[in-house]
Image 1 (spheres, rainbow, N blue to C red):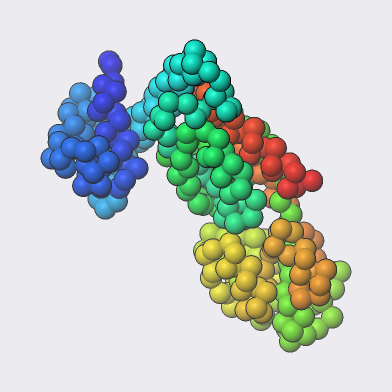
Image 2: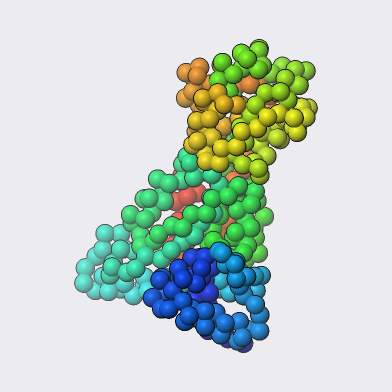
Length: 314
């Protein structure tokens, strides 16, 4: 059974945009035409592909079609890039020999990125890539323990994840280890944990009364630290600050203690505006996973991200 490419692209656009109306604006056809295409694809394949809610959601069968459509778009982009390079080579050399020739419309590359990576080291790398190649990035932020699910569903082409084992149909490369330490302001420590955390954890109970900062309700770094030192993680009052930079600012303002990476705490620890509570650091290994396709663009993105991560974590 063949999958009609135009209908698959339409489905992928609906999923990406969230509604039929939004997809119609991107595709420059009527919402009714978008709906008819999706229905025609469902009838052709004999499967329900969309859960029709706001925003729409692909079913398991729909996820496979979305992934197919995005892979097809990437391969088409690679083929057209070859034509563009050949055309430039006949007329004269381009600046980089890859991606800027011909004024081609950039391809959207959806990536899943954890919040701390997004808030610290990856954006300059992506900006450099976008300046050199015809690409726009559609970033999906999620916890590193869950970004692989977006890759598996076909929502993204690549992901920064804590999962080393490749998702089916993907390849995995190590990026490095992001180390988190429990920190707070000196004023916070003086109030809630005078003298810091004892090496043997005997005063860990003090942290069950002290407020902490969580990123969101899926953030388990602070909970993991409490459990490791033998404190009841269900007891502390919790603030929720769901943005990486704002989370760090909340800790630096004394709202609570939190686990911060060196990117966001080294300078303050050196200056004395933050202090380490003590206890063990938490190391989070990060990996780059991407679709296992022969794509020079995807490989270029991967190489740049891996190189910058290794510099950042060195």
